[in-house]
Length: 211
Image (cartoon, rainbow, N blue to C red):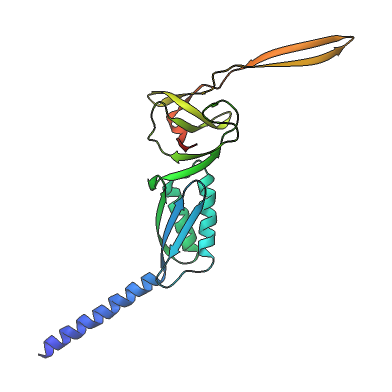
């Protein structure tokens, strides 16, 4: 009988210790949900016992910055959220989502130039789904070594490279005049053709989804 009593007491003590450990761990842990839709960056931070006042605004600022960063990934965002939580002596479980799904990122971009007319207009705002799941015919955003971010139509995929083309096939003709004096004028005419280019596949950031 006495041995059974001690067993019950031992179980109770173990339960109390386990519950205390769980509460201590829960006190310093948060669940973070980052929702990036290409327009807004929303961060929800929840914990059983609440969170420090400055944690969520700092996470929202970092998430907004990462939404605009072409090289950001779901993993890099999770790492950033964990680093911020650690500054407040918290551990974080981070979930990243967008309208494209879990661990899928949406990035805003703005069209510059007329190379994709009539499909896309100069100054038009677009939403890019950051993905490596693309196919011939998709409109994609990629990084170009000279021009930075470009938006083009994916025309070919060969091994580790892709061929991107402009929808606008018109050749623009420009004429400049230079006054040489004594009634003489130098006229210079040149043509501007749409940019078509081969790039490494890794340069593709994602597929344009909203336009």
